[in-house]
Image 1 (cartoon, one colour):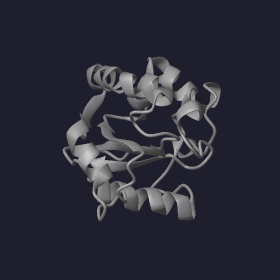
Image 2 (cartoon, rainbow, N blue to C red):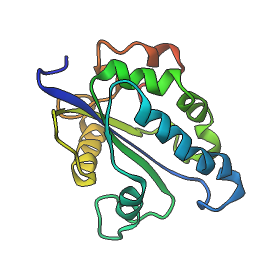
Image 3 (tube, helix red, strand yellow):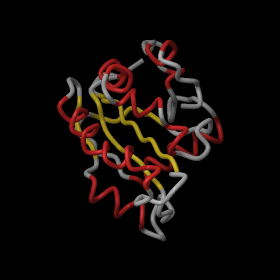
Length: 165
């Protein structure tokens, strides 16, 4: 249940099967701007780490994300689970989600973590990776969770999203 005065942070990441300039991931790469623009115009959207900052975080060898040049990730904040869920499953984002096996390695592994943040807080990638690792090691908790932990979330169940998503 969403605590009063809090928003929902989400961090997702995956490792691309191919380099960013490989034609086999062209549709994914070409769609990132479109998907992010739709997110930013969506009801309930609060904040997203911008592309240049995220790229720098992803490529930093000593950074929280490990410097993998094929890493693709998003860190954002939403007013609540319902708004995030609508964006993920009822917009063009769903078409990209459906093609994840074409573009990503280990698609059945944990690739998403969510947690509650005080309104106005902008999480860092260090914070996001701490939550992600906690979810991987311990499963859903109030500290870090996936869709199954959100009792109000229902769309992931009918939109072909397993608990590991």
